[in-house]
Length: 362
Image (cartoon, rainbow, N blue to C red; front, top):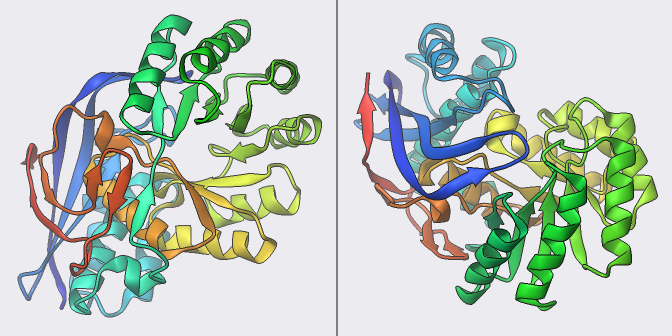
């Protein structure tokens, strides 16, 4: 099974509600789809998220990286030679992790098809069902409380709350949400780099004193501020999850060895795909540090790949894979089966896609 062609397109999917964080506001999912065709007629799919404020990847940079820089280095290669393909993708250029992730997904999709097995079974096969949280965007406290209550009424047991735009109001937001949903539901918060280290410690201690029962706080400080991240970790009881501070396996090693965070968040768009994400998992498992698997507003293409990694590895214990549930429609047939908070991995070869809609290929 050899790579004979590669195409890219753009997928557009409307969202149910605007997705708002301390870093950005998104009103429509707009990402790049990669389609790899082999000489046997098999097709592998991958997705690159356009997130310039997080990864630096834009539509133009993704197209250029894939078609001009990576494609010429992998055309003609045999899917069976997975390790060499991944080396060529990774070494083709620095950064551009979302572009690499899209190709990585498509290659793993084909690798599973080659061996007639779902990807999660090839990588470990730990579970075939995953329970995800749901994200509540940062808004006024009353609106966030309504959104959280609506999610709980649908059966969600974990709510991820976006904070970090105004530390004083963040406390009001969490109090309003707790009053609306009670204490039987887990709340994790994500500041998206919105606080300084001292500000983070202050507001998190206030949340602790208020008895808000926060499961964890994600990336309270700037991605580059590892010392600040460590300061927060050492001075609050709420567990700290490193997200934007962790792109590569080396970043994860640095965070874990320096005890700068209690947990690590893996995203395929940051790691450059499944291949590097597995390295992060292995390092974290060696040190006994649990991982969350997150997403960057991908469609079910990217999320299916993430779900297969989540299904494979036991060190991944927390799941923030709600992207498809935030979309107003699902134009993708096959892949992971989303039933609100419960995600099931089908026993189909590769990633199990059948048809990708809402996509225009260049």
